Length: 544
Image: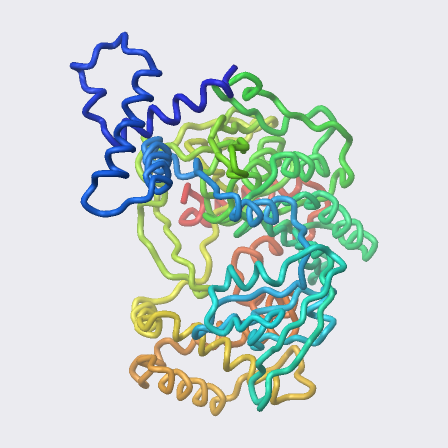
């Protein structure tokens, strides 16, 4: 029934945008939808045939669709072309037929950022910093990176011949790669930290998120961990069922996980845990920040509502809406918001803009390069957890313990902005220097240290690339530059875990999580310890 009403509404709303004059008050209200559709088609015909500039009819229809969806004032509803749907599918399902190389456009070249471990590209020896010259005989040196990726993808088991350019190599290098199912990792690694605390970053809620997290925690448990830090920072969400599945690993069977409330049939539902927990009693700290969204907020909110974990970091994004994909003619997709999410105690995850902008206080630049807002003094509604702890609503998930990341001073921030003032030259030079640094060393150790001479060499590389990196700029920014250069070298040389180990000493939120778990053996003790921390640090204890 609803599906049959979508098309007229879509065309009608498009007509409103393209020619709103015929929907003014003078138009009789009893005018049929079909008459309005005919009027809209007449407008399209006149524009296509008579407008002073040639406008293809398909572009007029596309503009109407864009106008309709833009008029909904919802950033999550969108029209997805058939060719773009594959990218959406990969982000949610997590697998595709390809060669397993992460690529970007660098100086007009399709450049390898990182091979995914265990994939055809990694096994063949393709390295970060390599760039594609040819793919199956097609020159791709000036090709759009998305078009090049399409050439690399294909059915598993088929081959693709490529020629690769490499820094220092005179000739391009030939490779024949056999495509395989490339599984994108929701959990890139797991690490046992000091004090027998496990650390697991969960990057995205794709179709294997629950299984990957369960396997990672099982492995850490076999190593004797007594507490867990689950890192949801930067996690944009993903599949609802995976968010529910991840929560099920930690809460009791039958416990409410999330409620959806929508207008359409079947859009309102209460989801609860369908199984008992795999890790009962394990003390958990969940790290969140302003980039934790959607399914990540479902997990964080449910664990907090059930007093199952302690949340540390910054208030989450506040993306509490459900999108449904509707298949359209020609293979295109309508992605439409159809419901909103609520935590088990009734907190809306969706950001409440009527209360004023979240994080409207002071903005600072973090050492990581992200902008951080804090000092939000909005009044938020108060809720109670299942055990009676006070929780704040009003959109997003407010952590139990607010911890700001390491931020830059005013002088450092000004210098960093200057370094980034020339397009992407700073980032490109950082990448190139890291790749060259690694290739010049046969046995680089994870505890490498950059000398003052090497820092001076990087400064010269920035100047050669046109970056304003004079001593007056470089010296105030040196802490930021060293952090990012060491992180990039760690990533390119040792992968995600190498990057993590290099930046751990600077991660205030993670270090606070370790402090809170120190000596704690039960979740109750963890929650009690957090109250003492909040009492001792009032500046960081309020809503962000």
